[in-house]
Image (cartoon, rainbow, N blue to C red; front, side, top):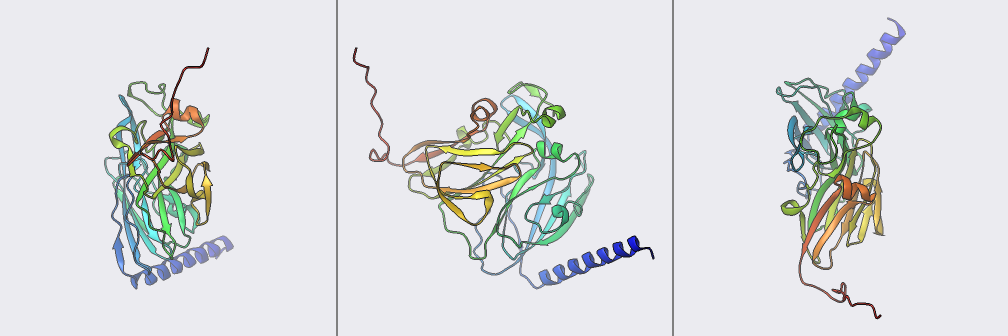
Length: 339
C-alpha cells in the first residue's frame, strides 16, 4: 500500500472512531429537540445543569421576498428568515444537526458553524443538492456566541444572499437572568439596481467583490425592526441583545442612540467590558450587549458608520414604555436668542 493511501486510511479510521465515540457518548444523554423561533425572537434560556443531546432541524429555503418596501430579492436562507434561526445549547452538550435542502431549491448548500471544533465546521458533512438531507454531530466545547453560515462556493455569494445565523453556547454556570432578549444580525446586500429601486432586483457579483453594498440592513430587510416590528421594552427592564455581523464583507460599529451598554461581551466571549458606547463587530463575528432603558421613548439601533444607517438601511427601533423621569432626562426648553 502506498504511503498516501495508508495515511488516508489512518485519517478516515481516526475520524470513524472519533465519530463512533461521540455517538456512544451521546447515547447516554437525555435528548432534547430545540424549538426554533424566528428572529428577533430567541430560544428559551437553558435551565438544566447537565449535558444533553440536542437535536436541531434546519431547512434551507430559497425564496423571494421584500428587501425594502416595493423592492424584492431572492434570498437563500436557513429556515426562511434572515438571519437564520438562532440556535441555543449548553457547554458540554452534544449537538446532532440535521440540514434539509428542499427539492424546490435550485442550488447545493451546506452549513459551517463557528462553534464547531473540527475542519470546515460541518461544511463537508452537510454539502447537499436540492432534495437531499444530511446530519452530523459535534460537541459544544466552547461557551460564547458564534456565527454560522453556508460555506458552499462561491461562499461570498451564498452569505451575501442571507445564509447566516448564530448559535449561543451557554456556559455551564449559566447566564444572568434578564427581562428581555433579542436577536439581531447586520448584513450587506448587493443588487444591480440602486437603493430602494423597485421590482425584483438580482444579485450583483461585481458589487460584492468590490465591497460596495446597495443595502446594509438589520435582520434581512430595510425597516425590519421599525414600525410595528420595532423591538419593545419597559423602563427599568434589563435587556440583552445578541448581535452579529453576517457580512459577507462589512464589519459593524454597533450603537444604540439613547443608552449606554452596561455590559458588552466583546466578540461574543464570556468576559464583559462595562460602560460602552459603541462596539466593533467583525464580519463573521458577534457581540452580546446588556443595557437598561431609563426613560420612555424610542432608542435607535444603528451602524455608527452612519451613511449605512441613514442611506442604506442599517437602522432599527427599540420602543420603550414607562414613566418619565425628568431627573434623568429633561424635556428641554427652546427660546429665541436675545437680539
